[in-house]
Image (tube, rainbow, N blue to C red; front, side, top):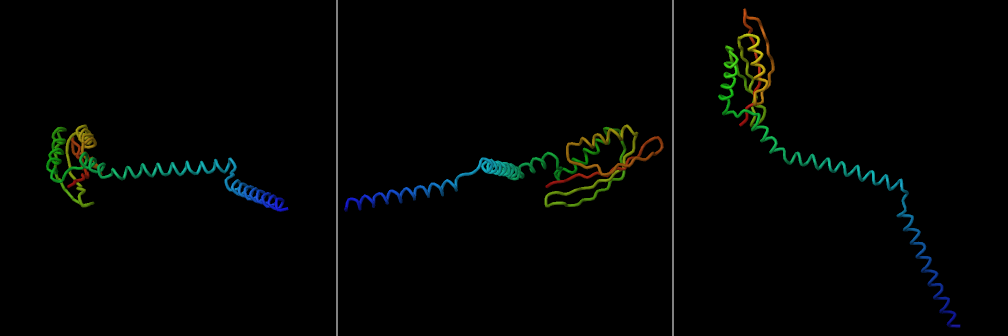
Length: 172
C-alpha cells in the first residue's frame, strides 16, 4: 500500500507540473502573440520615429555648425566697418567707370546687432540712360551684400538724373 501511495503522489505531482506548464504556456502565448497587422503597424511607427530622429539629427548638425557658416558668410559678404572707405572708393570707381557724375551723398546708420550696422546711402548721379543702366548692373553684381532700396529716374535735359537709395551692412 505504501507503494501505491507514493505512486499516486508522484502522478499527482506530474499532473500538477503539467498543469502549471500548460497554464504558463497559454499566458505567455497570449501575451506574445500578435497579428501580422499589429506587427506591421508597430514597424511603421518605428520607421516613422526613425525618420523624425534622423531629421532632428540633421537639424542639430546644422545648428552645431552655424557659427562657422555665419563667419564664412560675414567674411564673404559683410563689409568690415574699417573697410567702409574702401567700399566708398569702390562706389566711386563704379560711377567713374560708367562715366557718371555724382552729387549729394547722405548716410544714415542703424545698429541692428552688436557687431552689425546697416548704413543707408542716398546719392544722385547724372548721365546717359545706358550709363545708368550699366551702373545699376554693377551694383547688382557687387561682391558684398548691398540692397538697392529705390531708384528714381528723371529727365534732366539730354541726360538722366538717377536718385538711388541703397543699404550696405557693416560688420565689426
